[in-house]
Structure formats: structure tokens, C-alpha cells
Image 1 (cartoon, rainbow, N blue to C red):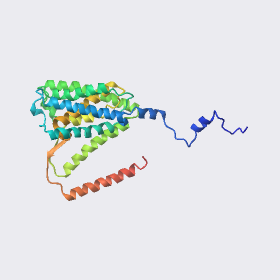
Image 2 (image 1 turned 90 degrees about the vertical axis):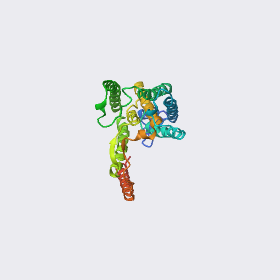
Image 3 (image 1 turned 45 degrees about the vertical axis):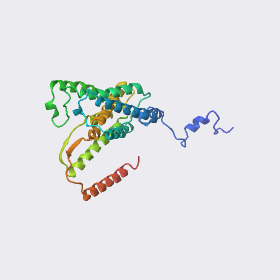
Image 4 (image 1 turned 30 degrees about the horizontal axis):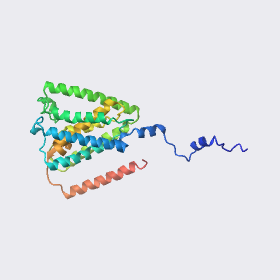
Length: 288
């Protein structure tokens, strides 16, 4: 018998070790299975939850518990299209992140998301919180009770955020999270650039709660830890509540007077600059 021949029992190992066979890292496979952001059914459940929160925020907004001055006037058209915008805004916040969990507790997420949306709306009716607006030097106008509230909630959120950053660094997922966070920052940086160079007047920043909550949600992606999933649900509930109460104004980080009309030469310059940036990006990432 030829000593170089591969026996029947040896064949599988020889095949596995063959350079012509594509190997799949077992840990990578498990990570993909746990990736909520790529699970179509889980995404569907999340979108249905956000829609439910939107409907609940609507009836609360129109009830006797919310002052009419604390939300934008609702028409049937705005009611319908703000629901559509809710879908368009929440979907990228889920898809662009790297949420990991071996099991999605939809009931717990639904409850906490509603608590986030409805709870934040009711907090806006508290006398020492209702007039808080996060703009330049806003802390100078805070009452002691408002400061205490900020410290309590801020400490909890900061603590869990730091824990998530350490955890994601250990599990080597921090780079993906960092890319998403940087995209968020670059997007608003680009808006500021367009306003500044387009001649907009009196530019000032105003951190709407939907923007802030959406940004914080990017950190809470390890749903193996229930606390992080709960905080993510609360933040997304606040995002939905903001869109329901104020529409697309909640996405305006930089407020300004409209300024001069956009000129053709400015639009052409921006288009060429963007195209040049895309070319550089493709060259730098050609090996990916």
C-alpha cells in the first residue's frame, strides 16, 4: 500500500487543512449569529416597537397631562409624515451599529422604550425641568434641583458608557463603534461647514434631546448586559418622543437665520469637493 496515500479516516482532516478550503473563524461565526443589527426579524420587532412608542407619545401629547406650549402643533399631515421620519431615523441607528446579543427580550425592550419616551415627556412637565434648554452657558440658569437631576442621570449614563467602552475594547469591537460615532460627528461637522461657508447668520448650537439620546444609544450595543439594552431602549424612546413632539426640528443641532440664497458657484464647489473626497476615500480604502 502506498504510504503517501490518505486513508478514509484521515481524509476529513486533510481536507480541512487544505489551502484550497476557505476557513471560517468559529468566534467570528458566533459573533455574526449574535449581531442584532444584521438580524432582519429583530430589526422588524424593533421598528414595530418604535412605531408603538410613537403612537403612545401622540395620545400623551394631546392629553391633559402635557401643556400645549411644550410641543409643536400637530396636523394630520405632520402626524403621518413624522411617523415615516421616525422609521427613517431609527433604522440607521440600529443598522449602523454593531449590537450584539444572543437573545433579544422584545417585551423588556418594549416596556423600557415606552418608559423612555413617555417618561421623558412627563419630565418636561416638572416645573424645575420644563424650561431647560441645552445651549451655550445653559448650566448658569439651572436650579439646584435641576442640577441634582442632571448629576444623578448623568452619573448613571456615564458609568454604563465607560463600562461599555472598556468591554468593547476587550472584545475588540470598539473600533466599529468608534467608526459609527465618528460618522455621527462628521455628519454634523459637515452641516456646520455648509452653514458657515454658505453665509448663514447667527449660527448657534442647540442640543435637542433626540440628537443627544440618539448619540448616546451608539454606545449601548452589548445587549448581553441587560442594563445596556435597557439604556438603549430608553434612549431610543427619547428619540421617538422628540420626533413626535417636535418633528424634524429635533435633528437641528446648529440653528441659524437662513442667510443668503444658495449660489450656483457654491453648489458646484461643494459637489466637486465632495467628489474629490470620495476619490481619496476609495484610494485609501482600496484594500478593504
